[in-house]
Image (cartoon, rainbow over all chains, first blue to last red; front, top):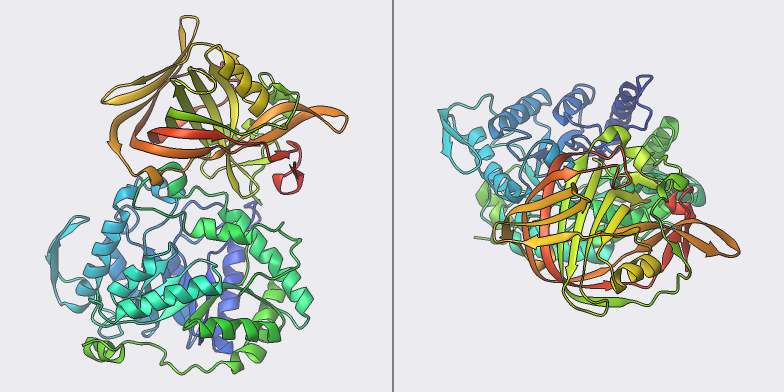
Length: 379
Length: 249
């Protein structure tokens, strides 16, 4: 089991008194501590226009700062929006390669397509086409990384042959992931030989089913990249405190605030009916967490990592038994928890919870395609 | 935390009905034609359109809804509704500002049993091959003309309709005051189209939302559905955040 931290970078109103500057630098302080504590990775989302919920529109810059201030922790794009109106695929490939170089080969490359009208409408993107454009990106970006020159003529974009530069530091390229929020997307990840980067807060039974489907499908995958990245990560909240009741109470403020914010956004499916978004996705899932009044929750939902170290060890072992390889933790939302308490929670987790879990995988799963396929039971 | 509405509920009740009872039986209306046109609205006044119980969506939205029942337990009727898209705590909702219904049993039932802010009028829902439209005139003046243009079929399960929060004056526990009445109909869709949203006429003063201004089309849908109007299960104090002001009946 590996552990990561996961940033939406939530900024409360009023947006004055340098609050965004303060929040960003608090996040960087948390990342430095997470690096010291031995966390595997820091992930940052790409979101646009999501008031208070996420002010993380340029994750590659935030992650570059993370890389410059840390030694070991890997930096995860979680995710790059693979829609032309958001990111041209050439620019996505270039920026990722630079981040991989500057971080000395610590990049994890997540891909996705956005799930809100707030964002897709704001960028004038067509929700009907995002699945197709995402698919093209996942197959072309690795080609840009691994071929000296590359040309392409497709549906989402075309380019005459050019050298897309620089090339990533990791060879053949950084591990690739797919954001999994809607049920069934884990199959998309598996079919392409990519990691499943879970972004919803589901329970154990749901996750176990997803992992089973993912593992069985990936055996026969056609990798989008040069190798198979068979890993399952899920997202969770983290608030660890010596006193279980205090941990749950404070952590519930975090989960409630996050879910409440998420619910104010407009999921594609609510206003723009399309087969491309058959499920409400992330937002609906987070609403389950928000069912409690923010600030008044007293019980911890199944699998949520809030409470004392003993409770967290118990919950994480259950996640481990579901087949999850990595848990990425959200540490704060709306600055609900004071920075010193967030740091204390991270320290306590690092000292008293992490030692219970062996980290027996290499830091990266970059490996030749044949080796990975064989390891996964394929031909 | 998210922005709350700041409208005085008393200002939102010009067309709000008085509901003598909240003990409403469910009722199914068969084969209703439903046109829904969704627009983003001017955000500078979004909080002024909603009571403190509700949050504007991000971005703020309005729903123009036209319904036509050619038969059924309430007889034939046509209804046009304008709603402001919102959230009651974490729940997707729409707040009707005014509704115009053809005269008959439907108008009184919708008003008295489910709290629709009904005015009697002559809304017209038209179905053409290249478009569907809902139109309302006030005298000779068009106060609403909204269309779905270039329909294409979509899956019956691709659509979501959000519940309404209907402001109505209710006598409860010896006190008469405005409440938000949650009306969450069930839609059993048998045919669905989607197309471009287009609003050609909208008189915000007529629709009792003087500052409401549609600015950016999202999408329009047109369906045939069996609609079950529900028993009233929840009401909400318009002055309190819905998370604390909601009452189960």
